[in-house]
Length: 325
Length: 277
Image (spheres, each protein chain N blue to C red):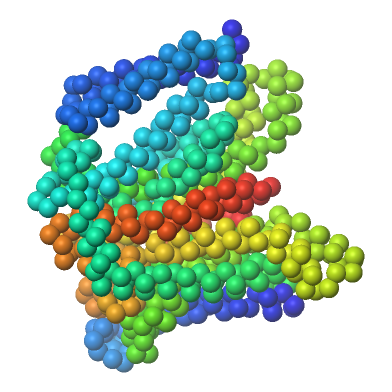
């Protein structure tokens, strides 16, 4: 028996064992309707095991371990997500005890979306994240270009600063920055929050872009110049197509991180210019069930990052994967 | 020096956004003043540092952060490895699965920790696996932080590890096969040594990130057990905002920056990470 057959059988037996454990624990301890989820998972595992054993010498390109891995990923990601959803749609007065909701009400979503404070905080959050990301990406693109292509004295200082900024706890910077803004009379102002959030976006952008730029075929630009291309042609026909996808991916990543930052807003504002994630701590308390309102707001807030990750997903992996040692 | 013309804006922004506040924190840490008062306040020398370094709450918060970091990083790497091995081997639905493992990362840490805390406290996790009656509230809170951060970060760890695996040149596998290595030998002699640097970078980045955990702890922090459910970052929030003592907050900032720096240096040494880029 070859090693791959043995590995495949081992995976099938593991799946069978896991299926049996899940089924017996489910029957012994899990109340309905969650029991159906457990039994579904158990049957999928048992079917995987059966298929693995029956088709052990067919389909050589399918790995049974990988099929198990995908099932693990599905459960790992979707069960907690379903719990957040359950919390978000909890009807008034109900208590969430099991994973499957017993009733559903969209009241929190409707209420949040039509509430002035949420709209206001969400737009502040959008402006802060967008402006901060834009500034960071433009500055970082130049810096990363210089770090990769122009040997100059002090480049280690720039690298070092970007790295140190990512090690330092954001709260330790945002705290004194909030006090500085008070002293300047700019506490709770949009510009103060934006500058505060640069400590997150700029180092991250420099780091992502420098990593990405290091492996771009910059020689193409020299070749284009040698062929007589003008500066503008080199930029538009060579540099933008070559570096564009990576810059867009980095923009998406930096934006998602800035969009989800709760720290800076907590230290530099007190309501008027508090961006959404930071204000979540306070306005959720206005609801009869703060946990439920928090979950609903969290799901709404996760939509733009999800779209960006979906759009940039391929780039996130390709950008990293193109790195060679 | 042409390079500086390109690098100066980013450097300037980092100095403004990080250097300036940290410099101010260092300065303010030698004074005592309430937020509402203007001016510098009363010069107290090293008293703020003495107060913090002799304070049990501070050291408990440091210990909490360290334990959280170790547990979170270990679990993230373990699950990340399983995910990465899966991603590395599947064909066809690669893009969908890659997207799937990054979905939890899109959920706010604050929201995820709140949800996990309610899952443990009478929610689905306690219905499935028994109630948290045996746990104190601070233990439930920290368990929620760990579960939340592991749930959100395992996918990110997997991304880094996939990179490590994809760095193993295909020729090395072919040579290994030509030399008659079985899969275990291939794993131990080829895959692991070649992927280890990337795994070390992943561990470093996740460790630094976990040590900075803030949102999740703020979400589940238990006022009754502040010392046990605080980390240095949330103590900074306490100092500046809740108690409004600027000198104390500034000192906490300085001390936690130093601590984070020492920790990052130590982790980099242990993992032999020389370049994180």
